[in-house]
Image (cartoon, rainbow, N blue to C red; front, side, top):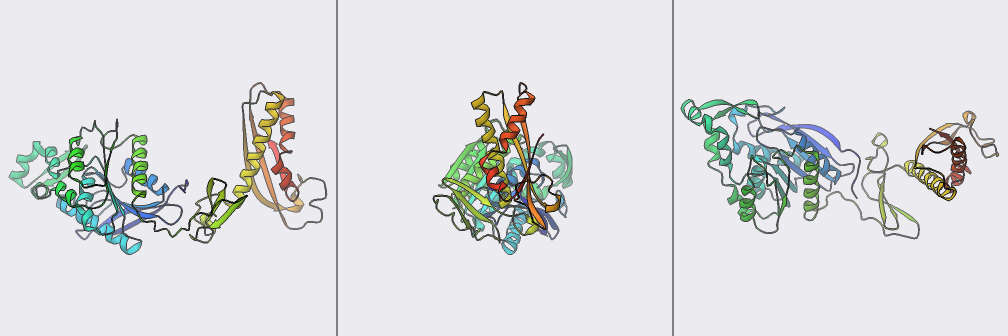
Length: 417
């Protein structure tokens, strides 16, 4: 079951390869994660790149805990970028793995974008817990980056360093950075890797050509998969492209990761509604209605994960759905020009003495203290509906079966929007 509410976010930091603190963000799903994923961003980018955020959020919605961080000297992380290289990036990744391992659980999924993709390919074989790897627009050779500095290569060689412009920002590039790039053979690491691999690349990527994906895919062992990000640019700036990539990664990884959430399986369907605990937290429950599957939970404010509607949310939904269906049946039968019904249901508890809208049938007589109150706000779309039509529909709303069931013991206030 995929939670649909926004992920919980934790801002964390841990020591990087050069001693400085690395700024990180951990996106957590509504309930306990099925597994943890580590995301590595592209060269000179950062954890807060929009596409990285979209991918992390989508993976969290699929049940993964996702850690992304700024490499040394980038974003909010400490350290000098000029002192870094591809080797230090891979060491930063391993530092992130150690932090996850000590604080939560080691990542079972590695995801890398562009040079971050090359980095996760380089370290995947060194992490025993990794069960799946996915790359997006990754270069098959780290020396691919040297093309970015062709115009400054002579100055870097002569002076040992040079300030170059990358994506409109100045960065100091030293000769040691270029020398380090020449020492890494990504495809050799890919060939030795045993984790299942998903290669994703756009055929129109003009930063890292599609031929890089071919070389990575060819070098990899099975099981391996390739997905074309047709029409996407290198940074996946289109929201639909990033969300598609995330959905594909989640589907791919779910085949291989081991569920660490501790959730019990949903119960089998019965004649009615079946509800059973998931064993995750104090309130999270499976809800099974025939072939339909839901989660029920309570808000974070009272100790839940907010992974699903609360019991009263379900009750309000039942009242709203029944009201809408009843009005539709009536309108169709009477051939009323009703285009659409929208029902907004609110539930609260009020003092019985304040319930001026309670039905006068003795059902609340003698009560003291608090009683439940449902308020419906009904919107009737249809420019040709008359005032009489609307008044009749409002009256019919009170005849919906769920309304009648609830009205036996609760006060219901209904008004037109």
